[in-house]
Image (cartoon, rainbow, N blue to C red; front, top):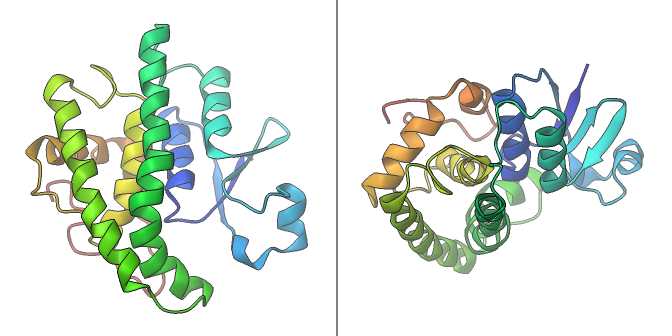
Length: 221
């Protein structure tokens, strides 16, 4: 059995979960308290990070290389286009969300509101939360601008770029930190992507101490 060692609200883990589910690859989800740094966990990944995917008799780490491995090993349905220029655009946007969006938004909102409490790492820093709440507006506007020109974020077909963005936004949506009324294009895009079968396990997540908001699993918001 394939196994994914993960944290439910981690956007990097969610990106891998979505890729696996879209390609109908069955996987057992194993929740990993990576901050406890157990010896077994560090043997699986000395970097002390999730996700870790056990597949094909291998242990794979880092969400980017994991998704690339999945794509090459299971190419249908494709989440990366054949054209080099189009592949570049997908990778650029995956990097945008996993780097810029993560640093400016996810780490300031999700990690402050949820991770600190779960890890027993103190209280949220209001300055960081304010910075994240301000930054997400810019990112939603940028997504809206992209979607004015394209059906999906990187082009006219759904790609890994959409899963990377949806992984971050779905984690933030769990704590009601996304204003879906800010941009109609983004709202419609998210409604499409969260209606996919691959999204079902994401919408079923339940985090102890953090109940789902009523709209979270509602496909019509």
